[in-house]
Structure formats: C-alpha cells, structure tokens
Length: 369
Image 1: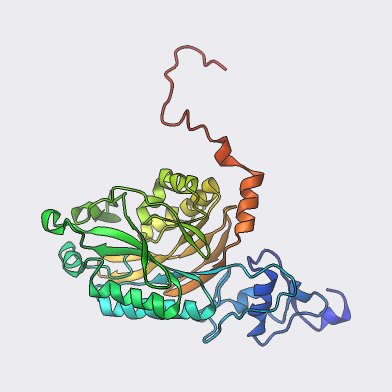
Image 2: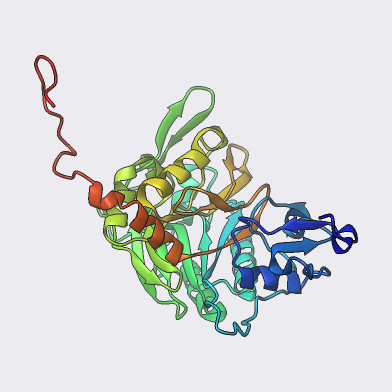
C-alpha cells in the first residue's frame, strides 16, 4: 500500500469473497473500475467489494449482483479450471393475489437466467399466501393446473432448473380429506417435473402473543423423503421450511448423496430472528453440504409477516450469500471440489455410529469404559 501506484488508488485485497478469480474478473468487467496492475485479481480499485454488490440500491455484505442487463459470459480460461456453476436464490413477498406473485417470480427467474444461473430457487408459498384457511384452500390447484403450467413454460423459456419451494397442491385425495399438500417441485430446463417432495413436518406452533399457526388444519403431511436429484450445480435434496428443525432428514439426504440441501421457507419474524441462520449453518456443518434457503419476506397481509434473509451456506458453515430487506436475488457459486475436500479431510459420515443411534443403554452404577 506504500508504493506510488497504491497511493493513487484505494485497494481492497481480494480475500474470501466467495468468488473464483474468473468470476471476480467478470464482476469487475461490467463496473467502471479496473483491477489494480500491482495486485492483479487480488484488488479492486477505488471502492470496496461491498459497494459493488447491490440489490435495490442497498449494499450487500456477500456475493450479490444486480446490475440490470448483465449476464456473466464464458471466458477463455487459458488452461485454468472451468467456471463453477452459479445458483440464484430468490426472496419475495407473496400475497393472496396469484397473478401478482407470478409476475414477481417470473421477473426474478428471468433476471437470474440472464445472469447465468443454472438453478433458480423460489421460496415456500411462491404461488400465494392466503389470508385465511378458507382462502388458501380455494386458491390451491392440482399439479396439472394452469398456474403451475406457467412455471413449466418459464423453465423452458429461460433454460434453467427451477426449485419451486412450496406449491399449494390439491392432491388425488382432496375430495376425501379436504386438505392440501405443501409440495416442493423440481423442474428441469425442459419443464419436466423431475422430483416432488411433500412437506413431512407441519408447522403447528402456538407462542402466546407472538406466533399462532396450525398448518395441519388444512395440510396433509407427506409420507416420504425423496432421493436427491442430479443437477448442473450438484445433487439437490429437497425439504421445506419447518423440516429445517429436524436434522434427521438432512442426514438421510446426505447419506443418499446430496451435495446441496434446500430449505425454501416462510419463517416468522419471531422464529427467524432467533433461529434462522443458526439452523441453516448447523445443517451445513453436520452434513458437509451446501445449504440453500430461498425465503419469503415482509408483510403478506394483515396477519402474516415473514423474516426473509434468503441465504446460502457452504459446507464449512460460512454464509456465502444473503439477501437483506425486500424482494431480490442473491447468487453463489457451488464449489463441489471444495465440498469433497472438506469431506475427505473430516470424514464425519464414516465416523457415524449408526449401530448406537436410536437407543440409549440403561445403566446402573458407575459407567463402564
């Protein structure tokens, strides 16, 4: 910093930004800043990285890119490692108005596709959040309905994988049960439904004066965990919101080969401010997976508000991307080589004692060695 060159510049050392050198160079390419000739890819001239990372005019602390019209372009690597897959994690405010929610979702997905994301994650209740049980039931549709077909077309149009984090599904048992399913769908770029997971843990919580929700009043619980799906970003395991509090499901998915666990959510402000980040980081650390959590944010109607803070956590438990306030998208690269190196260096799954879990020996007297 003491050189003549550095006296003419304000430099920020490139350190743990979460971006690969190639993507860092691409990020610089569409801002009116140049890499420092002295530091090369390890410095940004004139402004720190945080000021380059904007969403709705607000600086983000992690990997964000909201420059209108920008698309990451393939570059000649000159023998360097290929670019890592980019994912986009969306944050939105659903209302009872399905047309409005569709407009919001389609805008976010198209933006993410334009930036070069290969998988786009939408939150729980991306289709709507009703103001009452009766309204929710009246707005729900079967998977073959017109509303979901819009997203099938969107996946084809944009050429991306879509994680639809929680669709209000009228299943085949609707006539007999009068209840719906909270269904997490995964669509490929052809619009084909490659996986469907129905939420197994329903949010029935009564916190006096703070939270009162009973999902089971209108929702059937799912009956199975579905196998992870191979995508361009890695093997994705599906879960939904309240499932986050049950580590058994994340461990089961990791044992089946999941590299990315996804928890699309609509956390309440009360539970989110206390537990959201710590739970996501815990699931990442214990499974050595990337954890991706699209989120609802803000006021949906008079009696419902969500916490937001859509997030990506890496297999070491570090938050590598996060949305702040309001609708938006955060972006992160998925580094599977890094994931597998962590698993090799600390092979926790080979150390697990499945022969002991689920049973606690009753002991009398002093414990034996």
